[in-house]
Image (cartoon, rainbow, N blue to C red; front, side):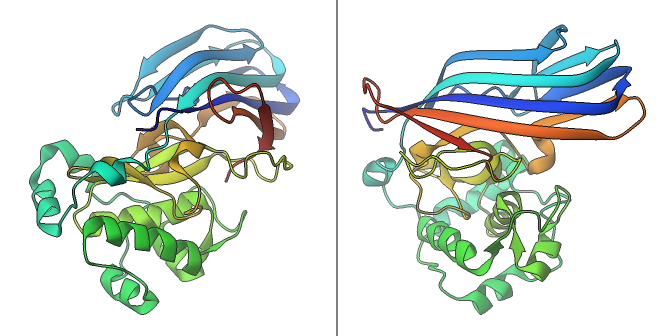
Length: 304
């Protein structure tokens, strides 16, 4: 691991506005970043306005999620998540990990430890022959599992067009393969489906991506970023981003992981009342280039 972690402050605000007051709202939130070997959660605060009690729990995969129920009339509902996180770049593990062979991977299919991340889900199930589809795309290196995944990451970024708004949260791998266009959620779930079809455990990662340090760009979408982690013996869980294959691993802040998007949506809930509603989302990420740096750069983005 590198000795110089990146540090981020993330402010994620979601505002719901209602034409007619809602009588009650119940919501589950996956917004608190994970704390692990490669990512340190330094500070965290969650705010809800109108004020209400917020419960904290841990889901099946160890992700922290929060629950609140607001039972009084409200015309607006604001959820603000503020986190300070240190992230280690994981590229150096490639220099110290011995090569992984296909014969090292095969036993994982019979391990209960990785069962959840080897099974197809509703969003990752496909009728397409993925081996044949990959053969038609070309450019895949089958020499060893890591080379396979890195070349797959690159090739998917080339053959699937990134187009915000072209899909929905319920788009399946089959639909993506017909369209050949989608967003990070869709492209990540395709990579997950392919990795699992080869016996490689793969999980869906939800969080934030900080691109182009020093560049400030406008909010362009109202979604978080998604990528993939695959488990390989000797490497452990390693990140792959088929939407942004050139960004360093230290540029991603993980909130939660699951089998696919449905395990870890940023927010999920219902409200009772009449009339239309709108949702505005804003994410600001402040980054110290390295810990101890006095220069702080801001990037206001909506990741997709």
